[in-house]
Length: 77
Image (cartoon, rainbow, N blue to C red; front, top):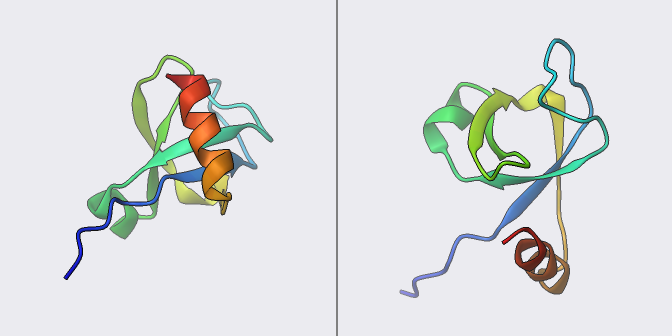
């Protein structure tokens, strides 16, 4: 059995209805949150570096190649 580090996920905002904190078409980092996922929410990291729950239907989760994800994480650190 191997311990695998969870893969970093990203999502694009497709709707900011009623929420001034989100920008449509912006790429956001998604943090793992099983409890939130069961309720159809995503834990999103915003520009301040804080994470908040948002309805999952406001986003499309996208797959990125590992080198691209690594560079995005480095740029936001």
